[in-house]
Length: 260
Length: 330
Image (cartoon, rainbow over all chains, first blue to last red; front, side, top):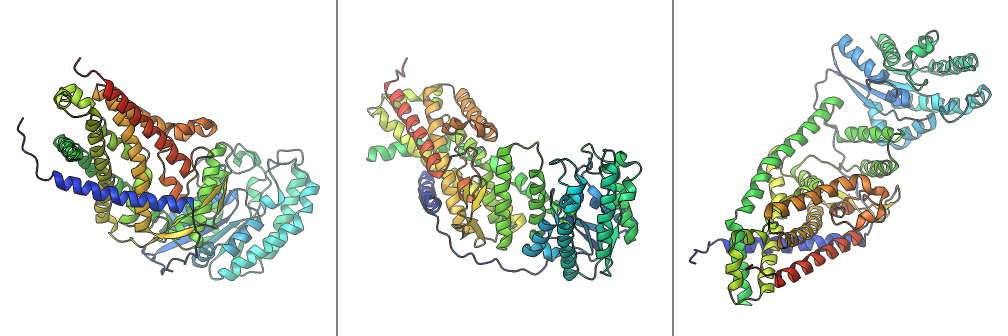
């Protein structure tokens, strides 16, 4: 059997040996690193300047709050923030961008903590052109976790108000040039036997919020309880707590009207 | 010794003749641009949605989205645990002002390996390894080989050495192609950008006491070293299959099925603990470097490496004992 031996088989051998050696070193290094990890001081990455390469002609909405801000219950996934964006895009003929910091289950303490500790959230609020906020629902109602008891809810008022004031104050100190829309609560329990009492509670809470909001020139309280007061359940999602798409749309449209 | 040298030479030349490396090269040449393009689309889409190129904003939105998904009651607990770990790591990156996915070719190379170590790269290895012995049986050349006065174990060893070299080449080639092609789009920089490693996972809490930053080039060297180890295990096992099964197609099918079963299992075995002794569940060695939660509780690097090692050794043991005793001329 006479076959010519390809000359470059030695090259392949060489490359193979080098590759093996290299990968062997890598394997040894990572075994050492993973099995005996040593922590060291991590220098912060370089602070780059804001490279916002997009045209100036745009609006930045920054949304803050709980599941309402997130849009839980909206089958289209927009939430009032998404609908607001849509309204503004068509109404103002501008590019509108949304940063949504809403987290399901967030109470005002959580929001306050985020505002204090998370540098990037603070930054985004400083830069935002419109700030929207939903706050208080999780401080007052622990929906799905307990029976609705008006007495218990009332007892939570003072604590909730205290942290709500702090949140609004922090927002104002971060950004006093952009409008800050504070969404009022609605009564989600109008179809329950305690509906009347919770309705009164919601009104009382909203009044307190309104009073705080009026202290700041750029803040606007956006009422929502009227939207859900007569045809309550029609605009609620299947969990009987969060709005559905139509409900969120009405809130979003109302906010857009405030801004336009 | 010179005997062995010539045998290995013979095997390497045979492997080159079969143009398997060319096949691997072409597969990568087609697929890497596709992945690069997909990555580019994702990046552009996020930028368009958020209206900014600031990675911190995008990362924050990711954290928010995951956190919100956590509150859904329809998500299994194991996924939640995985997501919680991920959120904590992302927050850690954010706190230290390090972009975990800085857009450059080196990052792409890193991500590419961590995404393909459990299926894609092993498949490439199977392409090379699966007909090493069975191919010769099918074509009858094995008889030529075995009628010479050379011990059978030497023949098998020479094949194994050639396979080892080719596995190394495939792993390095993958990295090289990923870097070379994605660099045309993302730029070739990023070698010294920091990557964090050393997260200690206990349940769903992430210990950060031992976290340290590595330059990306070192991280990649380590990551590819781990992937190489996983590939060697796959190579040994497909080697055994090619000894045991005369039909190359059947052998390849078995290996592909095993590997795909591995990815499916990884997604659902968390409640079946003894599944961790399968080799294909342990291929994701790079996860231990990045600090991703392993698919099954109780898995760690030592465990996975030992498991893969035992599988490989058993595979080789079976290969040798069967090959030496087999009556080939029948």
